[in-house]
Amino acid sequence: MSKSAVAIAIHGGAGVLTPGLLSPEKEDEVHQALADALAAGLVILDRGGSSLDAVEASVIALEECPWFNAGKGAVFTDSGHHELDAAIMSGADRDAGAIAGAHFIRNPIRGARAVMQHSEHVMLAGAGADEFLADQALPQVANDWFDTSLRRDQWAQNREAGAAATLEPGQKEMTTSSLKPGQKFGTVGAVARDAKGHVAAATSTGGITNKRYSRVGDTPLIGAGTWADDRDAAISATGHGEYFIRTAVAHDIAARIRHAGRHLKQACDEVVFEELKPMGGMGGVIAVSASGQPELVFNTPGMYRAWRDEQGRVHTAIYAQDDRVHA
Image (cartoon, rainbow, N blue to C red; front, side):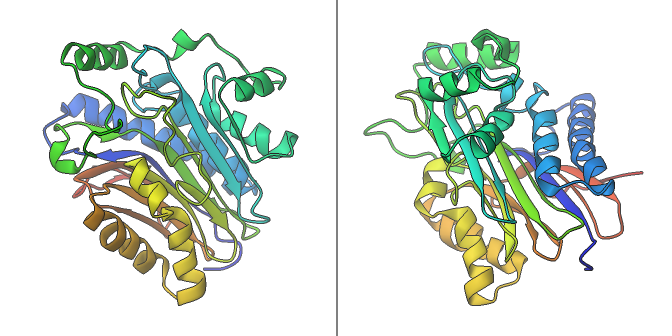
């Protein structure tokens, strides 16, 4: 691809998503939401804007959609609240920002970018993150603004059944076999390459349902759930965060490209299928190479995703064998 080639891909979470779980009407809603979120970033790239602005715009669109576990669709913690994580990274200079366990920032990805651009830090967490974000010119909301009836029902059902978050001291870690049909790892993300050849990645999540102990997954951890470097690729991950942290998934993919000469697809396949899966780590990644090649790889039955191909066509998909082309 030429230096001016732009590319973008997004995801809305991976999991046990198989045909028939959603009605045709609901499937159409998801496909349209994915197409709209992709368009939010694509319009910026097509106008010569930066990859950083593009991934932020796409993730904001996903955060505003109650279908996805980020922002408005965030899951409940065990105590009945919402704790929000996000990260963003620029491949041009490897500048990065992240928040973990935030409570009031309407769009967590904007909060992550504020940390990157308006503080000397990379990550802020909990009450400290809330305090910093309150001083930024960003929309703040009450924590119950993130409530949706779907997420509240999930929370109540888990509490009634005595189900806890997937990872607690002494409990077995979750694999796909222990997930119910329709369950997924809730994260949204975007990766892009702009006309100047710079890549960027952004990821946002509400975490796991009924989580306790201020649990934080891979999403806001640079190198685990989010990574961008103009020398190799931009990566955003979705899956069982504990495994993604232990294997430093996003950085591992980039390192295989830069140090071992792997192509992007090969690097993604090796990490997702040969590193994560044997450990029981389920999920996937979206990535875009330094030359603008998008890849979307997952070891679960499905992953909400969208991308623009080299011919300029927009694709959205939910299931493994799924590809809806938009005019």
